[in-house]
Length: 506
Image (cartoon, helix red, strand yellow):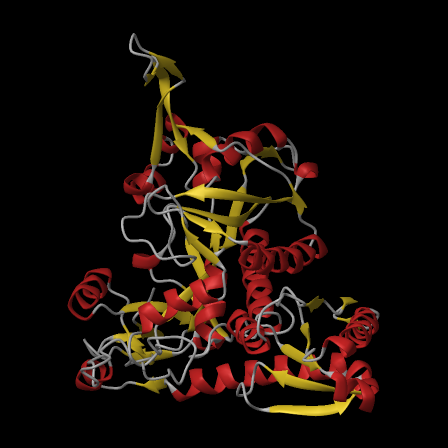
């Protein structure tokens, strides 16, 4: 007889973190690879998480004055050519359409018809085509600011892919705004970074650092790029969202001009900002454990699953009625400006199999109800933020009336745990020897489990940064906003520098 596994996911995080991640995605039924190389199919439970991300972010965007629109998937190649730095930054990732349609040859096989007059790029991002439209929409200072967001898919021809974290096609939102001054555009850039940071911490329970990217890590064609950086459980950084101050670069290449209040024709100032389905990957790696996915209640597709336990056929109808009544009572409760979302699992499979299925899917609360619970007016509750065997019985009235408080308690606990992990694995580095030691694997059986965030002085020299990245596979994640004005000696050169965060990253 095979030895029974102690955890639902194998291998564990410590044994093989990358494979553990893939197995969590599979066990939670979030997504799978598609017949098209590098692309993924997002399954209902995974897409419901993305819909919740969309819903909360969309509300935040509209509260800050932005409107949704939609722009074409295809971009004429000449549009990218206008912005030299931009096209250089994305050239190797672009998917190109060269033919217009298919037609059958003499043998009935489909073949591409004649080539297009101009190749079309499948959007890797939309600055260039949106800039073309903005140049028509903006005429006067009265048209500003122009605050637009779109929810869309983009394609970047990645060679090494991983579900949610890096795929050839992914879903995202991209905000694009136009302003009359540099100050207004920079304020917008910083505001949207703060929106992302607040969302990550208070909705996803994922603590992040906010800061500016170095020149080497800057978005192609931008004057400044800011990002939120989160620490995953393998201590690597995940860039979870970016906000770009584009200066007048794209305005000049797209001819976005406006007539000022003084009657002068001036180039506008633009921004862009975005997050993607990569957030789902960040969610998985921030909270999940060796039994599967762990979901903060605010982002969970459902908050509670009710599992009827009916060992005897004669009591089955009464238990089912009791469960359905409980479901309605819970759905009548308010949580986060909405209703408590409830699943009822009456599938004809063993109760243990049901429970473990929901544990692996990360649902916050599991409620088991059998004949004894029905007679006593109680429920048997398991919390996903605790061990699978840690369950307690409580009066049904207490459980229903306290459901919102219980979910808030779980949300706060997951954030506190993630913050403590980030703090534990953030270290101040003052010498090059300490830097090398910090990013050198100590566990030969799990070499990816090491390091963390190194807070240190750096001169921000691009050539030195590239050399460090090649030698140690470590990059500057950001110059934290909290210490942006601090001047500290560079650990490598001794020259005056900025305080930065170095880390290995996804």
